[in-house]
Image (tube, rainbow, N blue to C red; front, side, top):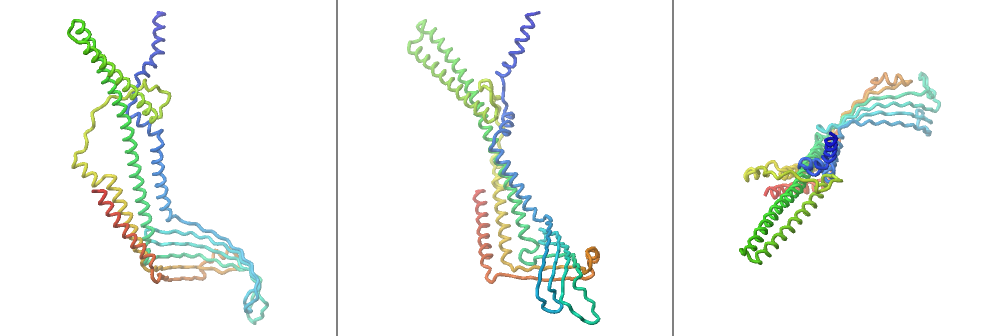
Length: 394
């Protein structure tokens, strides 16, 4: 019974070492470990995240903007007339919210302002008029302004195109991430395949060494009975020695490749001799020639990238052409006001006095050479992108 217990504990302690000696690192496990530890792919992932945040930043142009301001002003001046103040103190604040709508190019601004004004006037005496020059008064207003471009940048063309280009840039970042992923996985598979081939070479040379050793034993017997020459024995020994050298070289190459695989997988503290790859499997079926050509010309990353570059230049050309037009802007503004003797009434009585404005503003450089040159340059870039796509597909 005692001997059985001793054997059990010996087996218990030896089992991990035996298991480690036969440890197999599968391709899937190798790829997963390499992805977690290899910095090159992590850099590509960060580049994509940067492009994603840049796209969010471009779209933020439609966010509401809150604007607050406060002003205190004190002044003394000689009266220009009997009704001009000689001293005035103004304390005011303004709160506004502004938003730009990219789909229509419309800018909307909602603003509230309030001012407390205290003035001193020269003494005047007019029969029938009661005037209190030292009494403070309040002016308050609530205004809504709408600005709409009509020709150049009509309905927010430039901003909408900027958003388009930002989206295209994000698509390019996705394709780049996909390409980096494919390149990275391909590199890992190639290194793992090299490791598999090394192990197969070791097995092949072991079999060859055993074969030539058997041949050597046979030649020795034949020489003993006079059926072989001394030269045959020497040549066979040289052959055995050559294959043994090849076997050792294959083992060294295999150990070196195993270290490289362990380094890529981020596994340290493991003896390369105690690790082996999974057995070689048959290759997966590849695309037929016609199918591969069809894929390259319709769905491949090359085709998608070329199409996106053409779309970017086409969008840029549209924007630059639009800049040649006259700048015409329609502005609508309504402003209900209040005039009172105290602060609370200045808020509650907004609308006692109303002010509505409709204005059109137009401008254009006399020669507009800058816009024309940029439009011509954008047209050349667009044609260049078309030729680049043709070259890529060719």
